[in-house]
Length: 182
Image (tube, rainbow, N blue to C red; front, side, top):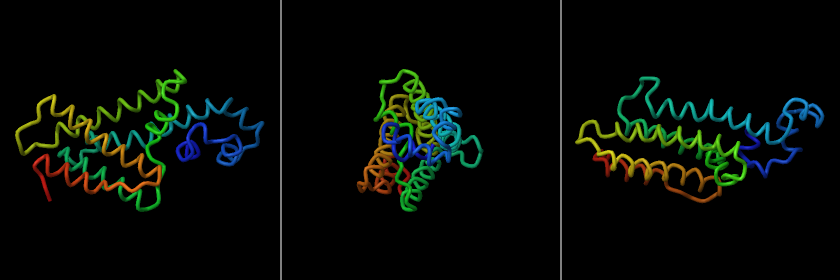
């Protein structure tokens, strides 16, 4: 998974994958079949670990935080901490979307599943972000979700490209616009 996450589908050569799996060429093909097949497995692994954790935290599956804005803040803080610790891989789902798009229908279906899971989780967190104020309308929730998800993914994309991006400023703006400035 990490080879594809760090280098992308096209950027991960067979020697990269052999090194990552510690397999010989013959064992690799016997175990995985093809580069595409192992990519699909890597995508599933990412979805079932990284994406699931993010979705569980944003949708409060663990019951730790009922306030959507606090859950979004924790997500942004975690992204900043990962970046400052040297993790510059970005988001595997959106990296794959940008690189592969719909050029492979099977991979596109997997990407779409990941995109929808993220959009739904962000939507729930946004809808629960103003519990102490007048609730957002469905249209406001949709617009805020697009804005916040775009900021989050913009940060991940900028980090992957080696560009500076002030996610903390975006987070402060978000808190202020939702009536919860620090």
